[in-house]
Length: 130
Image 1 (cartoon, rainbow, N blue to C red):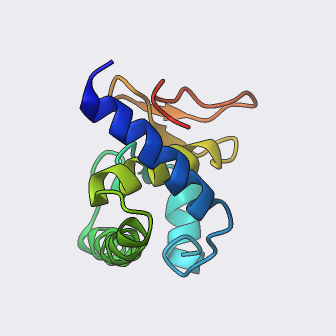
Image 2: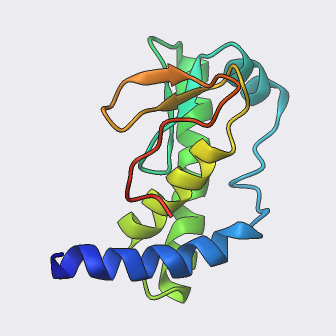
């Protein structure tokens, strides 16, 4: 096991604990436009902790996704510093948890990079996820 992976595993544990109870606006972007885009499969959770447009999107959808991702990055930066983790480590763990929290019918990014639609079972997640 390489040193980077060991460090990431330790950081993921700390980050997972910090994220478990996190209920900030960055994770609760449930405005009507976001809800509609999510329900329609136009946006999905990425493994890197950010939201993405699935397929093509118009300018309004891009603005919505960009705004959410800016807010997420700010939260991740603060929480990563507090957890002594890198931004990327924290964002990855947040992505793991966001994908785990998707509901049936919602889109998420699988470890191979493809977009999947969540079924009734658990989503396919990266084996490094906590």
